[in-house]
Image 1 (spheres, rainbow, N blue to C red):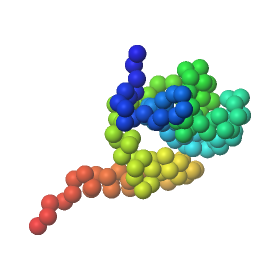
Image 2: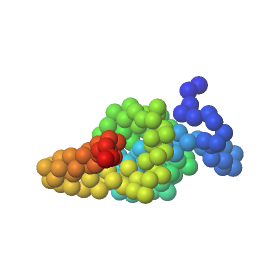
Image 3: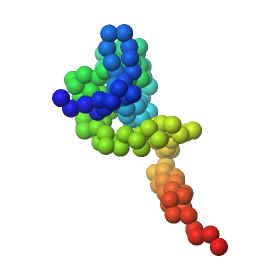
Length: 141
């Protein structure tokens, strides 16, 4: 059996079962994509045929998302199912992004709201420059 994480510290204990860090990461990934698409939780829940409360549990990672449900979510959000697993090897980067003052989800949600393609491109160039400067600071005199 392949698991996203088997370590005890990555488990959230709930009565009768364990929800792993992988479930939480998957929920965050679904949230990120849903927000980028501009779809509310209630709307996505309606399209999936589940209650908003059940859908919220998927995003929070408190209920596991079954394979069939994940496939349905991928269809509604317009991605291949592999999208949800692309960053498994980057768990620490995902944790770092979530621990930041502004989460990656929040940032992408704001960026996705820019309707003008040129404005989005400009915003990405500015951010790319900032990251580059942070990673490669100029030598000090």
